[in-house]
Structure formats: structure tokens, C-alpha cells
Length: 414
Ligand code: HGY
Ligand code: MN
Ligand code: MN
Ligand code: MN
Image 1 (cartoon, rainbow, N blue to C red):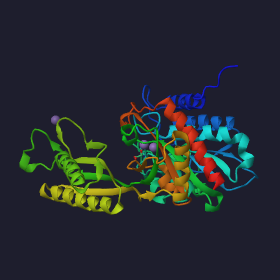
Image 2: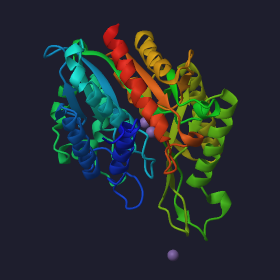
Image 3: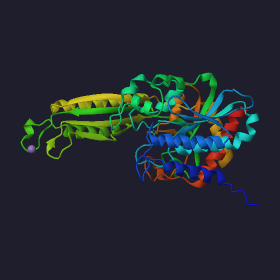
Image 4: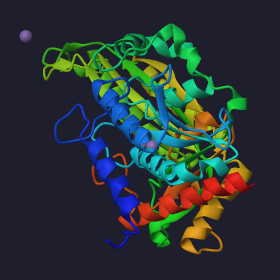
């Protein structure tokens, strides 16, 4: 009889993250945006694992893949477990997927004890947490929470495809997106396990932590508009160079964010027309702005917008700003947070688990509007994330599954 491998579930979870990592639009790296063929393949794979765990599965009206295990009696409100299946470009393999496979592992473990659960257990692989394709973020979880925003439909991806068109190509009906909204009475809460995407746990040599709150975020598409002109024949006093204006804006963003104690990032920029011998007429760029307190984030945005406006006016340039995403800061539910802490204590033996604020955004922010939420963090090497070097330890993943299972049982016992 082969000795039971105490890390068998962790190895399965990591193998599953590796399998999901192969589902990418780009050979040799992980690019899995929402509502794409690779997203569809990832959902199909996750659904097969949910099936293996004895769950009934479906895809909801906004593209989230869902699984359900009935509790003591059929039709009970559900405790929802999960995370997201979409990624940023050139991503790591654990941001999102680890939370989905840990949730499936716990469902599998509790399958034979479901008669004792006072709730159904559901697992969800959200369709679009990153917002890497269209701009709006958390659209899958906001669909489930019933806060889908009709203004998203005309947002376009890099190829000019609208969210509405992508929805239809994925086999979803834009007119039915509202059907994904869950009745609050059908849920008892949401728990998410996620890599920390920071290095506090590693610095303290801890495998797991408890999330206290998630910082609020705002995202914008900004444009500086000047005039495209001949690079040779246009003297400086006749130029309205959009890229020079945008470059000053990027420096202003960092200067003001540092001074205000927030984090602001210009992650992408497109220069038009983008030719070596043409003075840029237009620069479109993104701004990601976060702070632990929304008031700090909003003040920083006002200062940044004023500074860019002023720079542009000095150079005869126009400045346009469109907000594409806004998520308020969210406190974790104290009762569910205690259940997560119980799981961490039971697994690590720590009396007082480390409690952390997340500056990374999560689906839990969106789900918090429809049901109580809580999160556990898993140590990741050097805090690296949104990068192929994302890495976790197999023993930490084993601890994450054990702790998450204990957290679910703590909710059941409470
Ligand atoms: O951007 C974030 O914080 C998250 O990874 N979506
Ligand atoms: Mn992410
Ligand atoms: Mn994530
Ligand atoms: Mn010419």
C-alpha cells in the first residue's frame, strides 16, 4: 500500500495550474484574456475538475464557470469559493488559477461530508478579473454580484472588438448578462484563496495570511492630443508634440503618487501615428491608481489631472480622460475573516496569523456587494506577480488547501 502523500492534493493543484498555463493566446507565455478561445478552454478544463469533485457545473450569463455540491438538503444557499481564470499579458500561472484549484480541492475533500454541511458548496472560476482586454475590471464577479455596468459594452480591445461583440462570439447573449446576478439569499458568503502578490509573508517566513481589507482602485484611459507633423520640417516653436506632453505626464504621475502616499502606474501607451519621421499627434495611455483609503486615491487623481492639464495647456496640447474602472476599498467580513484565521491557525499552529491589507484588487471586492467575503493569502516568492516568475512552494499550497478546508468547516460550525 503506497504511503499516502500528504502533499498529493497540493501536487494535483500545481499540476492543474500548469495545465491552465498552457492555455494561452501566445506560444511560450501566458496570455489568457476574457471571452477568448483560451478562456473557453480554461473554463472547460476547470469544469471537468469540478465534475471530478462530484459537482454539477454550468457557465453563467457573463461567462463565469461554476460548480455546485449540494449540502445537507438540496437547494440550500451556497458558500461560494473561487477566484479568476483570466490573466494579464505575459502572466504568472498562480494569480487567479491557484484560487480556483484550491477551491476545487476543498470541494473534493468535502464531497463525502456534504451531508453535514448546512449550505451548498459552489466553486466559481471568474471570467474577467484583470480587465486586461477591455478596460473595465472585475466584470465576471460584478456580473454575479448584479452590478454589471451597461457602459462597458462599447469598450474595445486592442483589435477594436467591442465587449458586446466578444460576448456574442463567446456564445453569450448581451441582453441576458443580467441573468448572472445572484439573489443575496442564495449565498451565505464568499471565500477566496490567492497569492499575496507582495512579500510580507515571505519576510515573516509564514506560509499563509489573513486579508483585512482590499485597497480601492480607479483606472483611466488618458489621451494627450497635439498635431502630427513632419519630423524634419517642423521647428520646435511650431510643434505640439503629444508624446513629449504625455512623457511629462508620466513623470508627474509618479511624483504626485509618491508625495501623496498612493500607487499610480502608467502601464501602457500607444503613440499615433507612430512613425519614426512624424511628430506624434496623439498619445493614449492607461492610469491605474490605488490607495488603502478611497479619499487619498481620489485626491491624488485630482492632483494628477490638474498637473497634466496644466502641462498640456503650456504646450498647446489637449488632455482627455475616460474612467474605465472604479472599485471602492472593501473590508473583509469579520465573521468570515475569523473562519479564515481559524483555518490558518489550525494549519500553521500560529496563535495570531498575520493580517494584511491587499493593494492588489480581487474578485472579492465585487462579491462583497452581494454577500459577506473573506480571503486567505498564500506566500509567493519575492512577492513577484503579473510576471512569469510567479512562484509558490508545494508545502504552502498544501497548507492553503488544509487551511481553506478548515475555514469552510469553521463557517459550517458557526
Ligand atoms: O490589478 C490587480 O490588482 C489584480 O491583479 N487584478
Ligand atoms: Mn492579477
Ligand atoms: Mn488575481
Ligand atoms: Mn516624406
